[in-house]
Image 1 (tube, rainbow, N blue to C red):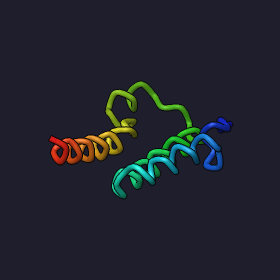
Image 2 (image 1 turned 30 degrees about the vertical axis):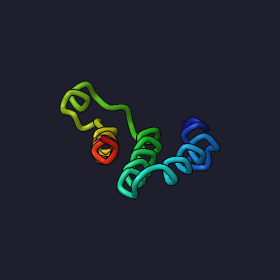
Image 3 (image 1 turned 180 degrees about the vertical axis):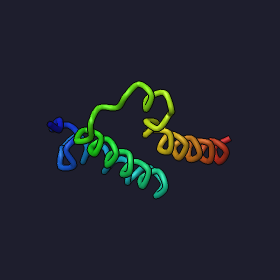
Image 4 (image 1 turned 120 degrees about the vertical axis):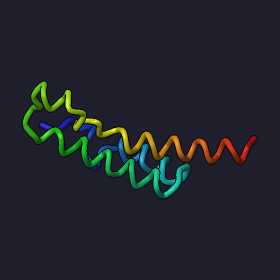
Length: 80
């Protein structure tokens, strides 16, 4: 069963995504939307085995993290 916090219509998710859309690049927003979709989808999938966890296929935050780091580095370069 899905948590109401991760429902696509959750006020918390909606508020965070609205803020992200205002403050972040389109790339970061796209990655955030993909991450939310992956988290929601993972709740309906069967539990992962230890082997699946160890192979790194569960790194659903990696792409979003890289997009944010790229954006942060770009902004830092403009500031300093």
